[in-house]
Image (cartoon, rainbow, N blue to C red):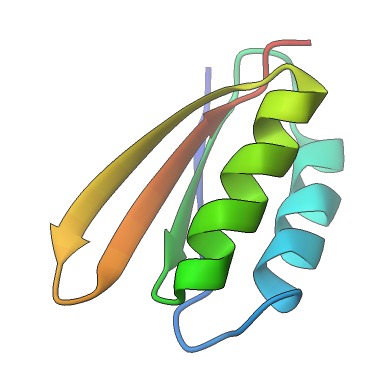
Length: 75
C-alpha cells in the first residue's frame, strides 16, 4: 500500500473530481489517495463518485474549512 496526496485546495468543482479520477487510474489496488479540499462541492461530488466506483472513502474535517478525503482503491 502506498499513500499519495492530491492538493486541491483553492480549486472549485469540477477540477478536484477530474484530478481525483485521473490520479485513481494510476493507483494500484490497495493504494490510498488523500485529497485535500476546501470547497463544499468537492465534499459532495468526490465521495459520491468514489462510492459509485466501489472505493472505500473516509472524510476527515481538519478545520478551517478544509477536509481530507481518504480514498482507498479497492478494485
